[in-house]
Length: 468
Ligand SMILES: Cc1cc2nc3c(=O)[nH]c(=O)nc-3n(C[C@H](O)[C@H](O)[C@H](O)COP(=O)(O)OP(=O)(O)OC[C@H]3O[C@@H](n4cnc5c(N)ncnc54)[C@H](O)[C@@H]3O)c2cc1C
Image: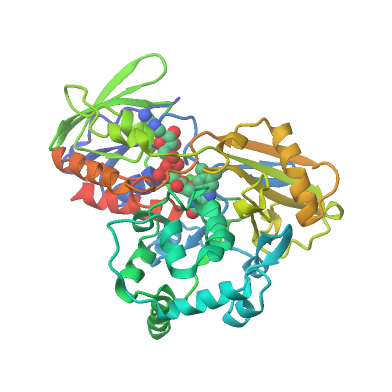
């Protein structure tokens, strides 16, 4: 643990605020960075020994292992501007053009996801009636919806059952490790909810959006990116730009009290409790930590309801093979596996196709995801049993033979918060908590979106709000 007290404030900075940032994940670091560039002082409190939260890259023997997220979409100008600001343009790597192909499993075989209307019509992925059902969606009329709908019900009403079973469900596994019958369309997929409201048909809505993008010269597909030395580059770059002494590692925040511009943060270093004073507090913590956080003099936990946000367990198995152990060309992003196919894995990323430098010469790297909302028990198996559970899938689908020459296992007991039906009440609780506690700002992946670009933008926005 290292800690340098932020006090005393140099006189020249007295008019500047000093703001506590709770949580050193990507949301907290983006917030701390922006506060610093706005001229304020920050103190980041992170309970772990490393910054970056669930972003964790390891380099070992020529392998580059991502234990958590593998890539993200450069989906907004703000993100590009941030990467430029951090001087990361030269480290940034775009996903290989080969990664445009995505595979799904149907009837025990890999089938490429059709990427154009003619490919869709000719694809063996869907039956003829299912294709007709999808085309008929163009005539889908706007309808009165309840206040929310599960993604499964919503998509079935638009496209029918087969598309949900063989496309939507595996995609939801790939993004949320979630269950479409539980996820809220309104909160987890707000753009789809909005298209349904404004256009009725999602296909007509997408076509209209594509026309607007073309007219404005906006690329229709955001680039998928990482960095030469992996995603850890991003939190490292954000942290490196913070003034010395702005981060306290090994600091578990126990309680915050105050209001207005007088806040106290009490944290524990494993032996002792410490309390420091701040003008404002940004809490960029996971749902369970927010739920447990006493806020206020009486020790009340106004966000206790967030305890019911489900974050299912996921295991990632990073597997290295000699190239001659895999017969598939690995010409794509990876494979998603529909639950109906009854396989042990949610999907597998072709990591060494996606970005350069992920495997030593003559080798390939695969990242297998296991568990999630639909198979939570599998996630907690030890690595040898996980390998035993997925080796047949890998043999059948990708022609993998023999033992991996490299294996790295990571278990995430609470991987990704699910924006399930009823998520609106958690958002309302966070908004009410902020309103009742001026000077406290809440964000992170339980509130603003789970993808890395959402978290980055949330962090920047939190900083700007706190600075105001
Ligand atoms: C396995 C996995 C794969 C993913 N894949 C992708 C992907 O490919 N692309 C993508 O865009 N997104 C992906 N995501 C989602 C994305 O990575 C996360 O949503 C995002 O990184 C969350 O960032 P955060 O800062 O909000 O939270 P976190 O990363 O969870 O950071 C919160 C921090 O708060 C700290 N903390 C908790 N309690 C306390 C306390 N009391 N006191 C002090 N500190 C505390 C924690 O130690 C942690 O460091 C993935 C997530 C996982 C788990």
